[in-house]
Structure formats: structure tokens, C-alpha cells
Image (cartoon, rainbow, N blue to C red; front, side, top):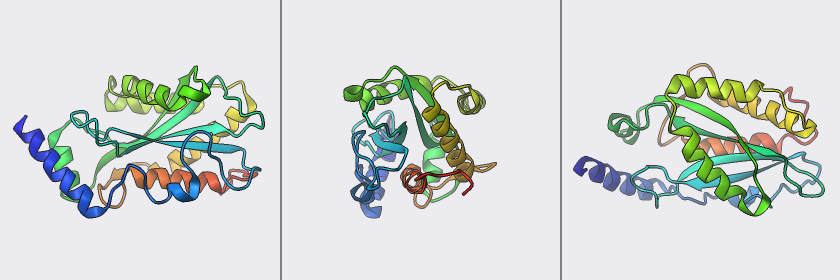
Length: 210
């Protein structure tokens, strides 16, 4: 317990020193929340960046980003589910992993992709937060990778969701690569969420050839 408290003190100090925020500056450009979309209504996709706890023992530090990607429908209706993804260390429960991150070292990481069923507009962020914690903490790294691969290849009936599935797959490949690494200071989950926002912003009538 003392070790975790020490890590928390160090983490708090580094977060202040490096200017981390639960609402980073690029939110001002891209909007925040499920109802916000991009300037051009032609974009077939919208996203929500959802701050969640960065550490299980410090739930008030909502600095970890989960990205929900949805179709930008004219009637604002939601599909039967949403694609959600994040970028996280593989062995995040290990104190040594946290120490390496705080020391500025690279650690093995993964882009996790999940399909979350049965969401409604008012509760979508809360639903994703709740479901994410349930479905992402019960698997080992190999199982998690397999679930991501299945999520990206499972047949989807709705045409706009098929397109989003391809977009999410491209994001995962472009950011993750073969052996993705995370760095706490220059390649973390907030950098990933900005990458997602930039990529989706370019997807106005996107052919996914970029």
C-alpha cells in the first residue's frame, strides 16, 4: 500500500509538471461528448473522448482516454452498439510497469478495440465507462489481442457501422503497428485520442486509402 501511495504522489507531481489534463486543449478544436461533431456535417463519423481513471486505486484521476466512434446520422439515432478503443500498457497492473513509465521508458502496449452493445444517447458515456471496466480487466494480454482482432473482423449488418469498423481497424494498424510501445510523456493514451480525432477529421468522404 505504501508503494502505491508513493507512486501516486510521484504521478501527481509529474502530471502537474507536464501539464496533463482530463480535458486537453485539442478538445476545444474537436468538441467533447457524444453530441459534438466536426465543422463539416459531411463527415460520416463522430467520436466521443471519455476521460476515465488512469489507475484503479486513484479513480479521481480521470486522465485515461477511451474513444467511442459512431456514425454521424442525420436523425442523431444511435446504432445497436458502438466501437470503443484505447491505448494502454499490456502489463498495467505491475508496479514495475508504472515505474518504467514514470521514468520515461517505453513499455509494451496495445490498442484495445471493443464493440459495446445496447447504448442509448443519454447514457452512452456512462455505459461505455461501466462496460469498459468490466470487459477489459478480465483478460490476459493474449486474450485481449484476440478479442480486438475478432472485434475488427466480426460481420456487421449496418452499412455505416461496417465503414466505422474499417476506420477503427485502420486507426489500430496505423498507430499500433506490429509491436506498439507506450511512453508516458510522448506516446500515451491522450496522444492516441488526438491521433484518432485527427484521423477521423480527415475521413470526410474518406476512401480509407490514406
